[in-house]
Image (tube, rainbow, N blue to C red; front, side):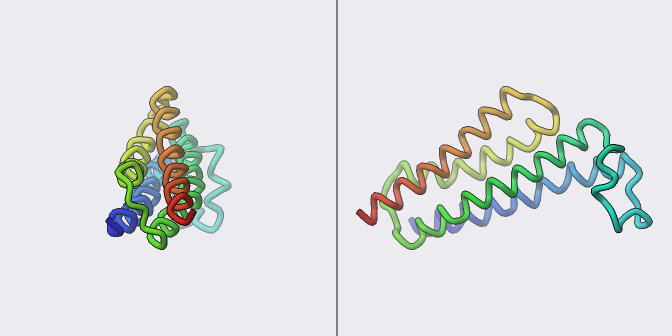
Length: 134
């Protein structure tokens, strides 16, 4: 069971790294090159709309992992014996992976559902770990 929380953490990090792909594509479309590599943020206004959303998506992925990683580590320490915790651990990286195209392709309803589900999964992990301590 502990391995589930470790996998959730690892897969969630991979999702954050995957969010770099549409960001890179947006930068390439905007003319990103070695010459302007010293100031990639200055290129933001030149990005196509999907590229701007890719930047925001990537930033949100970092915010998500900053909440989810401690939840996984807490579960690794407390080892909650709960089906709900296991489902939440697998759900987070899964829905966050689908969050990326929903955000980049501007599908707000899907993006909102994936975001809320990922956040709920993280909250469940915290709850299950804390209840294991009590």
